[in-house]
Amino acid sequence: QIFVQTPDRVSRDGMLDDLLVLLDGAFPADGPETLGGLVHFVGIANVDLMDEPVEGAADIKAALVAIEFEYETSSAVG
Image (tube, rainbow, N blue to C red; front, side, top):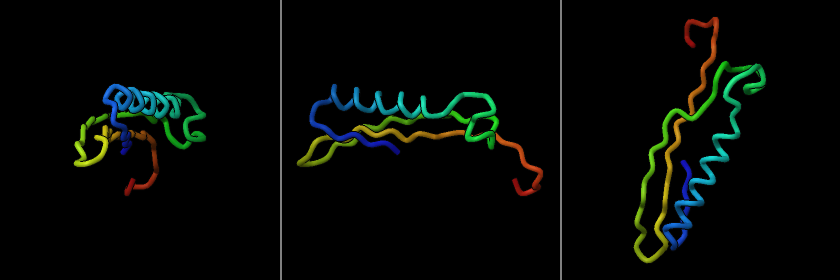
């Protein structure tokens, strides 16, 4: 979850967008370097955006970010 709280809606949206871009860039899309070679793929699977009004304070812009990891294992449990 990512939360941004500031009185100005435009600033709030921009700050959240900037954080989501940074998060996306933190995970290489492919290659053996992906988490030290532990996974085949890691990336953002889904982003749910929410605006949360706060009584007596600045509103909150929130994002619930689902991150997907693809890997193999020899274990039947996974």
